[in-house]
Each structure stands twice: as C-alpha cells, then as structure tokens.
Image 1 (tube, rainbow, N blue to C red):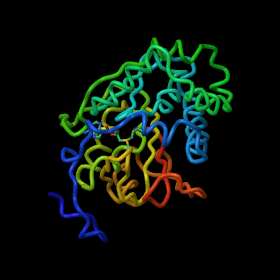
Image 2: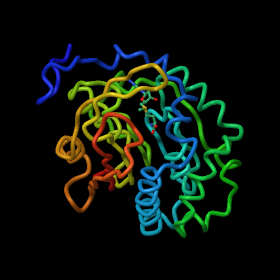
Image 3: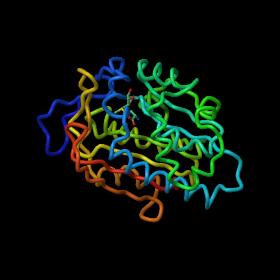
Image 4: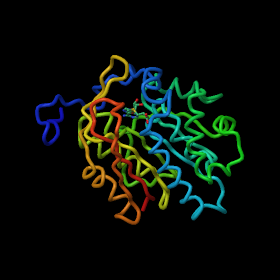
Length: 265
Ligand SMILES: C[S@@+](CC[C@H](N)C(=O)[O-])C[C@H]1O[C@@H](n2cnc3c(N)ncnc32)[C@H](O)[C@@H]1O
C-alpha cells in the first residue's frame, strides 16, 4: 500500500488495481458531467481547439492525416472529437469493461449530447473549415482498445501517435504519486517527437463518486503536474500549464482544473 500523499498522511491509500473499475457506470458519469456542456468543459475546449488548430495549421497543413490516441477515454468523446479533423485513426484506450461497452456503443452513431461539444470546437476556424460529417468520420476513424495504462512496458519506447489527449486520468485512478507519474509517462511516451498533446487534471482531488461508487484520486497541483510532464515536453516553449478557476463547483471534492498542453520533445 502507498503511505499516502504529503499533507494527507492519514487518508486511505488506494492503488489502481484496488478500485472497482468494472463498477464505473458510464451512463451515470455522462449524466453528471457530459449530458449538458458545462462551463468548465467549454473553457477547456476553447483552449484545446486553439492549441490543436494552431499546431496543425503551422506544422501539419500539407501532411497526410495522422494517428491520434485518447488514453482512458472512459465515457468522454470530446477529446476524440477535438482530434478528428486531422486524424485517419483515433485509438481510445480504456480498462473498464463498462466504459469499453459505452465507447463501442458510440461508434456507429454517437449520442446527441456530443453535438454541443462539436459545436463548441467549431468556434475555431480550423474546425469550421472541416467539411466532413463528424459522426460519419468518427465511425470511420475511431477504434476502441482494451488496455491497462499501468501494465505496459515503458522501456524507452517512443510511441507512434502524432497527437494525443488525456483527460482526468493520471490523477483520477489512484492515490499513489508513483502510479500518477507512471501514467503521465505512459501517455507522453506514446507520442512521437513533436506531437501536439492536451491533458486535463482535477486539482487537489480527494476522490469522486460515479453513481454510488467512489473512486480514488491523487492530490496533485500545478507543481506535480509540471514535474511529471517536463521530462517529455521541455520547459515553457513546449509546455503550457493553466489553472482554471471554477465559479460553479459542479464536480465534488477538488479545487479547480488544470490543463497542460504543448508538443512532445
Ligand atoms: C475519471 S475517469 C476519466 C474518463 C474520461 N477520460 C473523461 O475525460 O471523463 C478515469 C478513467 O480511467 C480509467 N482507468 C482507470 N484505471 C485505468 C488503467 N489502469 N488503464 C486504463 N484505464 C484506466 C477508468 O475506467 C475511467 O474511465
């Protein structure tokens, strides 16, 4: 067992394997978080669409479509939608059988609630210029893969993915700082040199409920996030970190959200 985090020495430690991922209820999660576009997600989307829009306009304009990855996609489709205009394939890796089934159920034609997220992305001209039907393109491009982010060989590998996202994952699956760091490293090592990435974190999360089920979280702030990403994304020029204050506390037990984005070094 992990002995807990600095400042929270007596909190119950829960490693990733000890949480009931099979009991993660994707419908309850979507209802609580993504049925309606929340203020915080709209803010995250506004930063992400400009980041990806700028990166692909500057560096990838004349290139063939790329391959993207969203790690531990859970029951959230908007990171995949954010990569859609530039990808010939997007892999959604996930461990929970319930979330895998949800993601599979969205492949043929995703639910209407995701339309508002696509509309928010389309406030950026790069997304507006995309002339495909996002449902049709998702059907062709998105694939779902069962995988455990902590059960992979990280022996110096450099992944094939040219764009990647990780939303509320490394800090929202364990109380352990060691496991948090391994998952961030897995995500960054999956990316090819120069690949644009975007990650979102709950700040100082104490854990969270999905329906009646409680899941662990690792209490991280800007410092831990920066330290975990810097080896893979360099300093200021390649790594940007922003804290998003949240006027409405819609999700329990945390003090804000932090987004980190840039390009793999
Ligand atoms: C808080 S949810 C985030 C889901 C989604 N990315 C989002 O933005 O809402 C954490 C996700 O991590 C997944 N997960 C937990 N441990 C995992 C592991 N070892 N490997 C892969 N996925 C894992 C869970 O099943 C869940 O979908």
